[in-house]
Amino acid sequence: MARRSHPLIRYTGYARFAVETFILRRKRPYLFILVINDQCNLNCFYCASKNTGQYNLRDPAVRAALSAAFDRGHRALVITGGEPMLWQDGPTRIHDVVAYAYSLGFHDIAIFTNGTHPLDIPDVTWIVTVDGTRAAHNAIRANSYDLIMSHVRHAQAKVLAAITLSKANADTLEAAVEEIAGLRLFHGITFNLLTHNPAVVAQHGFLGEERARLLDRVWALKQQGYPIVLSKAAYRAMKNNDWQRPVQQIELLAGNRVFTCCRDVDNPDVCRHCGYSSCVEISQALRGKPSAIFELLKAT
Image (cartoon, rainbow, N blue to C red):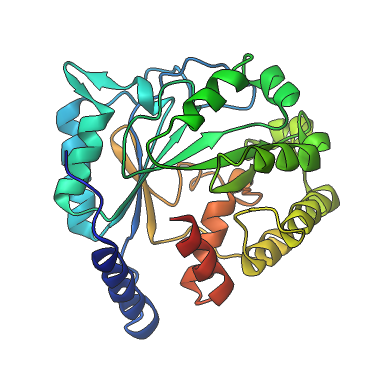
């Protein structure tokens, strides 16, 4: 199996991208997000991208998309779904997709997963959704907490926990971060604010002052020393909602279309209240904010 690039090669790639971005002022793509399927074995209330049958790619399409993305300049890859660990096309599994991406020359690969399947691919970064304390998570995610933690405990690579914050679990934020950090299984804890159409956000998410107060709580946990993946620059940008979007250096493939930044780029009502912290972090790094650059380097 092809493996992750040597650290020297990866950091040389980062340096080259920095020169092109900050000195030559080019907007070369860097992060490619591949929606490989939308099949999922869970039924989380806030997810609108599961089991629609629209985005289940065949292996030739996956390979063509990765090759084209690499040719456009991408060197970092996130594979998501649905639940990407369910993806298979004949004998080809996601393990083979990762190997192919590394053979092309991608430097960093992350897999965003619900963690209900073994995390048995080395040389990737696993991003595993843990939606709060054990009780809160189980209420949202079909009593899957113990199974997920078993898989994280036996993971063959670095694992980040990801919390989607909504009214269903925000009250347990501090307890959840303390619980997750106390397990000493995760390299860091990242988060998203529920991002959806306005009606869903109004019912289940946070806007205005409520959103700002929630972000203050996340930042307070960071200040207390918990391994929250959030820079000061990204925290301020999210709280003030003043970061530039879409992020031109991010592309996402869903079905037969490549979107700039994410598939909500055509929906200003969703984009206006984006809560994807990783996109904000990347936007601040691309502005040359040292705290954001450092935070991303720590997480990869």
